[in-house]
Image (cartoon, rainbow, N blue to C red; front, side):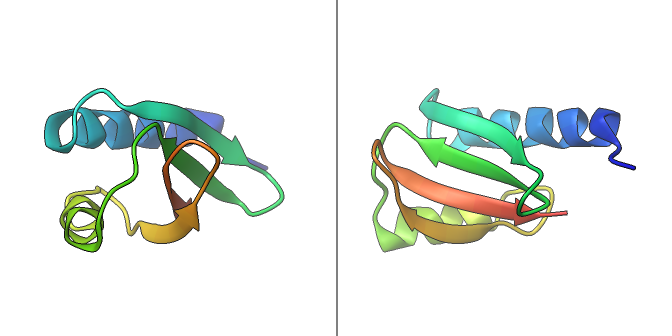
Length: 78
């Protein structure tokens, strides 16, 4: 059974980190049941250093997931 309360809290923590480190630039932040992960896409494209800096700030392990239609993507496996 999926614990959506925990997922929502984690999404709030991720949103807080992004807003503090990069600014308000979240294009999409959603849970994917197929991947059992939270997927984040920004509305900006980050360089390698900015990606590394942002990943080190997340409350759970976040991985670079490539470039999406709008910007840099990350994935957080639960």
